[in-house]
Amino acid sequence: MRVCTLLLASLFMTFGLRAQEPTGAQIEFSTKVVDLGTLSRDDDKQMVRLQYTNVGDIPLVVTEVRTSCSCTTVQHDRKKVLPGERGVINITMDPAKAPEGSFYRVLQVYSTATNGTQHITLKAEIE
Image (tube, rainbow, N blue to C red):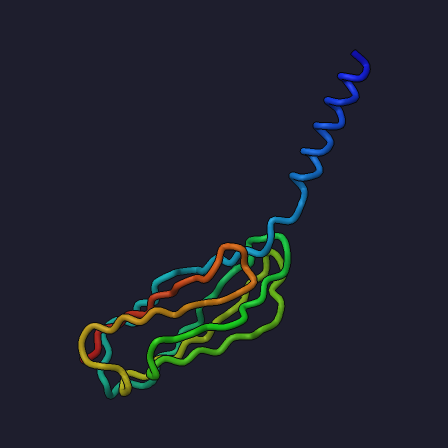
């Protein structure tokens, strides 16, 4: 009986310690779709600050953001974002370089997050 009690106590302690292990960095965006509305090709460049939060339990680093169009550029810091803190990706879209009509582009956000590559949709109607 004593051996069985010690074995059970040991088993519970092992699972208790595993539950406290870090799960990794997790990136969560304020939105996954950025709608710029209706734009004219003569309009100024459109700038958007896209915020994200590290909802994980270790520091997060955004390593790269890829765009699919030369009309869209991005800037981001490659510094560590601690758990619970926010970071920003600055997106600039030039309507003069965008094709007319419905405009949809996907930004691919690569980071050290365990929830993988994130996709942000940038959309507008270009007149």
